[in-house]
Length: 193
Image (cartoon, rainbow, N blue to C red; front, side, top):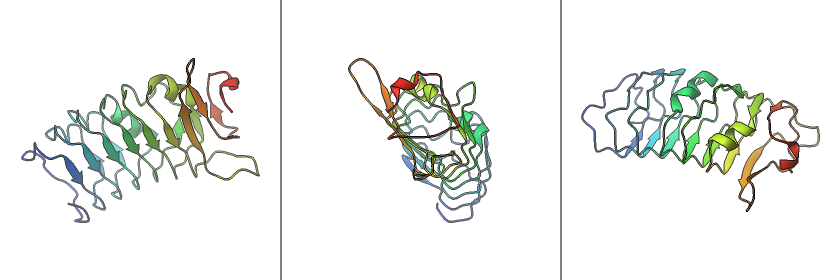
């Protein structure tokens, strides 16, 4: 269904569908319960649409979804709240959007216990609360923050990967000499390399 200029679609007769590719269409708004009949969906690709708004419960009933691609859309930080309670989700790609903050309270990624990887590359992120990610996303291993609006030191490239390494006594977020001035966190700085 990719590259068909689809603006709206009905999923009532596809309950066995496991993969859905809607790349390069004209979707602008994802309404509540939009995908609710796709209970067996594992892979959902919504890249390169014109999505500006995703309502809460848009992904309701996607209990098996592991991979979600929302890259190259027009999503802002408020749309992130639609991703709550996606318990099977492992990989989330929100790169090339308009997300400006990851320091919201309440934390938008609530109840995503299996999330391993998040890609926020090429957004407008200025602030991030790293402790929320560590506390609320126990399996998270990788956050890609490349090419955002952080202010690095002059000798650092504009690319940041936050990688969590397991340790016997504590979890550590390694930032590979990350020098971000606009980072919001409430963990002691000694936990960072």
